[in-house]
Image (tube, rainbow, N blue to C red; front, side):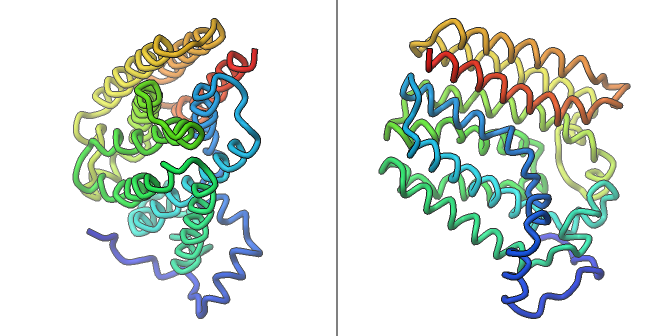
Amino acid sequence: MHCSSWPERRPPVTSRRDAVSVLATHPRRFARLVKIEHTVFALPFAYVGAFLAVGKTPSAHDLVWITLAMVGARSLAMALNRLVDAGIDARNPRTAARELPSGQLSVIQVVLFCATSLALFLVAVFQLAPKTHSLWPIPVAMFVVYPYLKRFTWLCHLWLGAADGLAPVGAWVAITNHLPWQAWMLGVAVTFWVGGFDCFYALFDVDVDRREGLHSIATRFGVRGAFWGARVSHVLTVGALVVAGLGLSVGVLYWLGVAAVAVLLVYEHSLVRPDDLRRLDAAFFTMNGVISVAFAVFVIADAVT
């Protein structure tokens, strides 16, 4: 399945040279395209996986290449999503001003950006542990599939969560070349954390999604269903962090981090109600950034002390 036609107002790109020129001269457009500030959601959990994998500070080599791999992977995922959804975004008042539908960037420019992001991801992966050299197609395949899932199933929220959940798993294997169950449990925690707050995110576009025939937990089960989906998911998030901690040699700071996540999630849910979504922006964007950074700080402090 593919998106419908592109909006007429995009400026034509006549050559690959034009596209490369935009890559070099308009980095802010691409930063906005991939919402670079939202890297704060997944990157801290990659560091969580890295520090827990070795129980101390990883080498600078590993941290640098894990960071670059994450930047490349996330940029690829977001750019692919924007490409596939450009037609839908153009018909949604909330997203019509995004870079592709508004004509600030063209298809070929974003395709080249995807290729550059994939190249960065692959270069970084091949500087890390050997097992990552054969596992890299898995996240890329998940990135490609995700934008299409909302055309078929409301379970797209969990798929998105699972893609982000690869962050701590990938960082763990990138350093140790092993994938113990504790790493997977961290991935489960991130899967339900992201899937839960994506249930909230779906509330931004319920009417548009219904008109476009798209699937989400909100279109399938209503606003209250989205709230319950988020609540259950976030309870499972805390549970998975507890189980992971029980299987690791962690100290009190790790458990304080888990407690902080639980408290912050409760506060996030207190910001919005099914009949009052005025603070949905704060609940989705601000609080989830705070949650990921706060937990990473506790884990890192626990590992280095």
